[in-house]
Length: 93
Image (tube, rainbow, N blue to C red; front, side, top):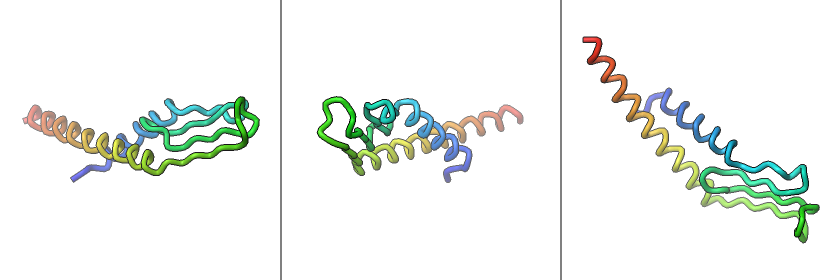
């Protein structure tokens, strides 16, 4: 059974990684890309260099892959936290 701390920690890690590796430059005339490890959202404003007009792209498959990565992180953290808890419990005996 997956515990709440593993879920919160895993989702938190994924959100922080997504925010750190995304590019937010739409307001400066460039583009914005969001997603980690795959970029599932992209926005290029009409005034961006070499742009024929505003472009918005959302790739649902990449979002699903990102969510699968987040689930894998949660499962690994659950395993690690369970092993750590057992080791600490046995050390106290």
